[in-house]
Image (cartoon, rainbow, N blue to C red; front, side, top):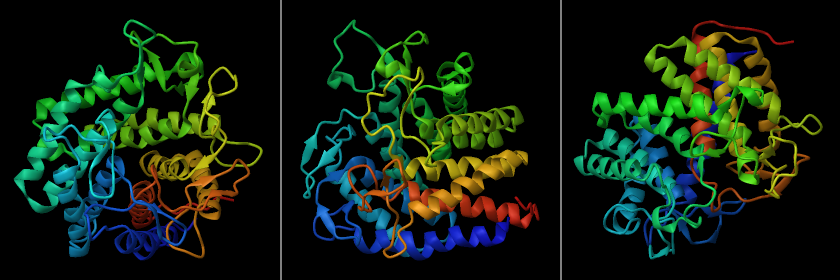
Amino acid sequence: MNFKKLSEQYKTELLENVLPFWLEKSLDREHGGYFTCLDREGKVFDTDKFIWLQAREVYMFSSLYNKIEKNQAWLDAADHGAAFLLERGHDGNFNWYFSLDVEGNPLTEPYNIFSYTFATIAFGQLNLATGNQLYADVAMKTFDIIRSKVDNPKGKWNKAVPGSRALKNFALPMILCNLALEIEHLLPKSLLDQLIEDCLHEVLEVFYRPELGGIIIENVCLDGELSDTFDGRVVNPGHAIEAMWFIMDLGVRLQREDLIQKAVNITLNMLEYGWDKKYGGIFYFMDRSGHPPQQLEWDQKLWWVHMETLISLIKGYQLTGSQECLVWFEKVHNYTWAHFKDVEYPEWYGYLNRQGEVLLSLKGGKWKGCFHVPRALYQCWRTLEDIAQKDLIVHVV
């Protein structure tokens, strides 16, 4: 495998295809913020604005400004989105809405905790890029709200009947593993250490279940017990694998080889578990007991699942030399580039059917924006570059 050539492939795709697409097509110059509902050619097909994607795009341009080069166009794009978020994205007390109309009028109440988490990393990275204390204050105020909502993320918008079946979800501790490092420069050491410890406990001791064959499940009872219900049986292989590169990054920071190796082992286990052996690609949802999943889209192949898997696999090889990671990386790389990359128009497809055919030709929508594709291209580029520089050339037959 030619790591230098692969590194250039990911770098070129990021800098010459994906980022220019979002810079050119997504900025709303009239009302502020970004358009994310973009068709195959990048034309706007819906003007609603979703806080997840607004914040993710601010984060992406800020982060790449910090990590690649001081590109003023990237910083301007981040500032553009941040101004809209500050003015229209929350209720005045940094409770972040879920969706807005084109002018920024709220459509959906601030029930979704991930609007808060993505706002936190967006303003944290923008503070790092600019030194503007306002952005640091926004990130920390939002982070404090997240901490206050951990036990009941939806707050008064929780639809569950009080005292009924109560479950906790894997997504929040998973996201916090990444958030901890994204705003590390803003956190007191004691708070950061405690956050990391709590996240590692939740991911590796609560949601990771050795007794189920070493898989990670999406929901458990509040006491950590298993729930034999639709929600309690659901497995999302992409979520689990994405979390593992967060754990690897924490393992590097903490100088804990045991964490890194465990994350690699779980990555490989979840990939073997979730791989569609008939058509290739990774299933979106599965039922841990083999029952019919409740999600009708369970067998679709999604962009973010495969992009995040590429990151975990190449980091796993970089950090441990695992040949199994390398073999799987080549397999997932070939599938991903063959099926998700649009060879005629910029940016990548997001949704395939089980057979790997394009299901929706959009380049952005309510859930897909300027985030998973550019982040994965960056992470793979830099990791492959590091491997190439260390002359770790391995040929996979």
